[in-house]
Image (cartoon, rainbow, N blue to C red; front, top):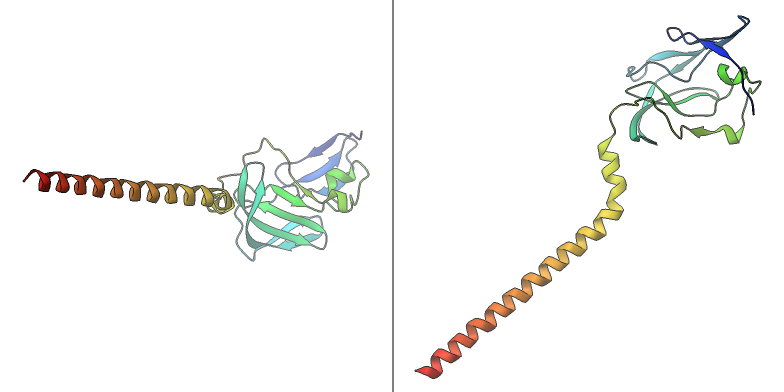
Length: 171
């Protein structure tokens, strides 16, 4: 198990060790709601251009995201909070404190849990994802309702025919 103590300045995202050694700027979060095409400072000496890319699945549901990448640094960020939700984590300063400069393929991942509010969910994506499950149920209910309606119509016609035949025999 690896552990270390780092200090992160929340205003400028600078990461330092206990002894004051500067590791760089973390890119675990960036600005919230940047403009599409805006250039942001990703980490020390690296910038990235923001590109809106739709939605991405998180533990809090689908979130609208933007992408800010430069080479193998950066990743997908929640649009409303600026929190990194998927990355390669190459040369990320908080990982550098643990002597991990490139986690490789196995480091490619998104967040699996967080207590940070990522912002409102993208409900349209939630609905689209649920459609394959909800559509067969809706079709079943619709067919069931049509069958019941037809059976009731048929039963009503039979009652009307019986009344007519009974009334015609009585005369």
